[in-house]
Length: 261
Image (tube, rainbow, N blue to C red; front, side):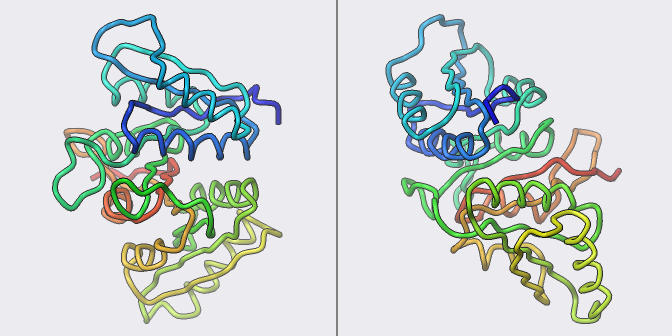
């Protein structure tokens, strides 16, 4: 790949969280062979690129990212990144927003983007504020054995292969599902990631608890965007939102089908 396709777009500011997101995205862009756009949003128009943004761009180039661009744009992070998401390979944001409630790792921008973006959205964090995201461990993906989670499984397979990481597939089911659920999982793996080495984790628990339990040793968690469309707009499903808010590693939300409320 030559970097001629859609870039990975990162929302950046001078915070450590945003810098961590930029460097994480640089690794991803290098692995996927695509461009990297570092986008700083301001409330008023400004033509100058600040020195700290140039430093991040230089570091991203040294990490191997192709065609790194730094840009300053006018507008709110949510509105601008949502618009750019329709021409991006992925949108990446940091996790420790100033408007985050106590106990939650993200502000309002990340969940809103994850619910409505036109491409995958990554919310990047480490285990605690000030901690960089992990750069080792497997790619963890939650699946249900049905086409609803195919986009997440496909994306997780691509990410694992590009990064040289293992792929761990987590299928949470009730005790009564038994062999039917296991058969559905095998059919899904053959349909979406045939030939790719996969570690299977079939657990009798909720999907959120199962994924949070395993996320501490993962490089990232990938889930499908599942939710509904209430009068006020699209909202994430409870599992996806819980991971975006509380997981101890980066969470990547793949666009997926939405169901009416």
